[in-house]
Length: 293
Image (cartoon, rainbow, N blue to C red; front, side, top):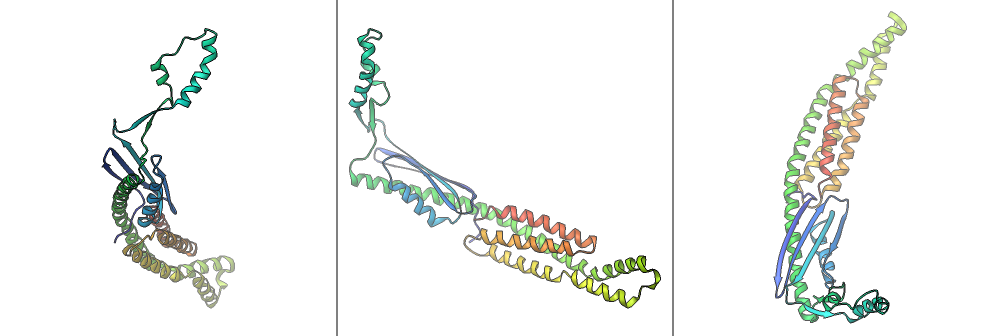
């Protein structure tokens, strides 16, 4: 199982009797799993089903699930809202009595908002349960399609992340090669400084002693070893299963910590250059990790 991304889209449609529906599910990046649901009134159980099915498939991401359901024309019952009609008549009565307005027509009254209502609700509990179950199945199909899209994004991300790790590995090797020059550079720099201060009277053994102490402080082997360890851990996560985005994000912080220390200890332009290149690649790696579930 490869890693999964957090961006995708899925859609499913269905029909049963006089009803037809469409389900859309989409997701974007998110630190945790957040499910937002929009659906038709009267089908309250669908929201619970959408959340439970999303939680069974995903661990991170902001999901939006929408359900549109409608009854075929002619299958809906039509009801006259007499209470609403009486309100309209009561409001207009003073204008009729004063002669400011003429008697309303029937078609005008029926066209007023809320006077004629379409009853799309399913009154039979058994029929409603069957309809909700059918729509819930389409919810699962849409979420499956979304999961497939996120895994496709994950395959693309895996190639990018592996490329960045290969580049980090190469830079670690280059840094190891130039890090061996550190003691000689430090000694030469210290000897030159001592000569400027003391002239020819600077003792060679003193120079060697002080330069050795400075070289120990500038030793970057521990940082390079830790970078190598983080590299192996990142490759292992990419090859594993489940949601690894959080752990990869944590590793990028550790990568950057060691790269910063490498730069601060550097005594040569060559090592500093490798350290800066490492930081740039690690930052690119971090940006893509934000898309991993």
